[in-house]
Length: 254
Ligand code: IPE
Ligand code: IPE
Ligand code: MG
Image 1 (cartoon, rainbow, N blue to C red):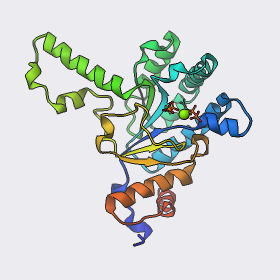
Image 2: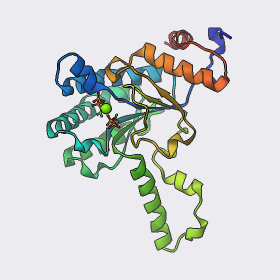
Image 3: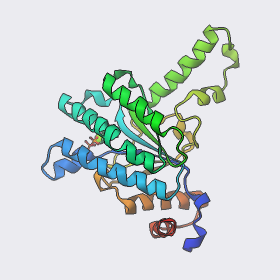
Image 4: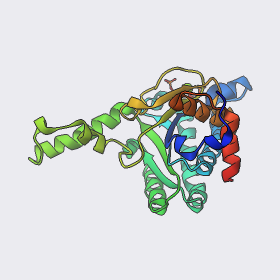
């Protein structure tokens, strides 16, 4: 069954989308360039994805920028990724703010340089009252770390005598997991062809639709994103809708 474009409504779109942005290194290698070239191209794809979600009035977009395991990469690659992150936090934040985006960094920031941590605090403070897209950047993030830090908070409550361990509920843990105040995760996308979660949003992904694509992150454009959303809408409503229709919706809201 083919949907007509006017039946694809805002309500059927995912409210919270997360992306494992994978494939930058391979993208560069395919072009005979160093891996870091792919990471730089990946920043363009990030900009595109943020604009795409803003235009479609998606509530939250969560991007996996650096995992807790990525420290194991060669030193020069790690430092390039840090520099890129710093650059984006310095240069792009004003534009995000102008576009009403609320920026939040999730992950264990304690391992980052003081300068980077300072930028994070400033960027979050500047955009905290914005009502548009919630953009969450996962940096030194791990799904197991997230569950552990939530458990630690509850353990502290128990230690202080404010809570009995036998009274702990799933809802209490949920309330302490990253992004608890945002819409639940609806759609988790991974680019780059691998079929795994790589320790991303383990708790939050419990009921998310999973979408895997061979497309490498720097090539993930509006068309690829529209196809991912069309696939989500089709699965939810159990009948077909095309990427073309999502793009039509996009042109209506422009
Ligand atoms: C993902 O691309 C970006 C980060 C992990 C920062 P990769 O660097 O993992 O690229 P591939 O998977 O090696 O192609
Ligand atoms: C996942 O990609 C992490 C990010 C996209 C930041 P990786 O390339 O690090 O994942 P693995 O190592 O292939 O599982
Ligand atoms: Mg990879």
